[in-house]
Length: 541
Image 1 (cartoon, rainbow, N blue to C red):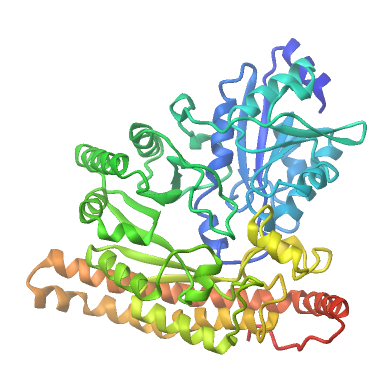
Image 2: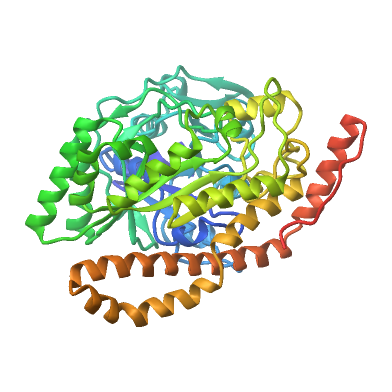
């Protein structure tokens, strides 16, 4: 339905509706399971902002967390049936993950066929991807943060005003790309409404995302999150927790900010507010944060975090190999990383370690190491650090990053018409790796590390921990201490046995896929440009 219908709705007193869709992941991957229990925060923030626009309602459909709505033959949301039952005048599409872009374009085309205006936004839409989107079913691309842009854009649609008056967007005019002036990043977060998860339809949440920082000053070569960090007040953060608990009964939270604790004073204040709120409400939260390793030296901060019931830490170790850390612009030492991890463990935190395997070396600093030797480095480090859970992904040449520019300049990225964007989830080789590795050996090595960490032996360990808890508690003569030690062992075994089951499911999905044939075609093309042949290995077992 185009602008004329929006105006007709206004004349008849009907409210217009924005539907924001989070596209489904293309295949089973490590994100599939948690995605069924949470949702992305960005679309919720945008939909919440729209609720204050006169004459407009907004909702979010997360295809990865979709339970009760109409479904098509493939088991995915049936957007045609959804549109018949609950008409949307404008559809927004969330492009936060590059691997979901093919599905995003498919959804956009469906809504365009139904006469609906389409908007897209997210980290994927930079550089040449902006015009690509506009030629694949998207009417307007929102560039950067959309909290304020979306309000102006919907008002513009309703009044048929000139789109170029809305800052921070791109669109086609007479078949040519037209880009409006950029919009300044938001600094006054307290002026924005608190995200309302009531906008999510047909989903069910167990884990609630919370945020207090936008941007990141770490300048990692592979990361798409850039710019000077901007902080909201501790009170606004606290208001998000309170709103979720009081309106939805949520007690399990993930602070999605890349660097929790970066503003030490405000973080201490937030932790104390969380502690006091839980005591007054009689609640027990479980909070996960992403944090830097060097915060482990701050005993006061760690103590405040524990009192706030921050139990789980997600830490980007990236690599235990010094040369790879330098290539990533990471100023870390592998041995120091282990020592700092021990400080976190001593404070009582459970740690999820995040790694990138096979990171490509810069041309001016060549680095050779076989896949097997790299596996030994990773396995040894993970064992010494005693991590509770891990994820080992392959490098992803994300749009707009320095890593992508470097690999593209050297001609190493496989063409997306062969190895498509649906494989950009960290589980597949997307470029020709450093010698002596091959794409196949790099992928198999990452899977080997994961299989070594998550294994069927942990199913037995889980059962043993259940049986032995009473004995441990009595032996310690302290139920509280006994519970904590037992729970840590039980949780570790349970997560690792669950990880093994997820790996088995991923391998089964991989065997049904045509990726190896696509990779072989991409390698032939790469070899032709290099005037040689590339060796082919077997993929994951």
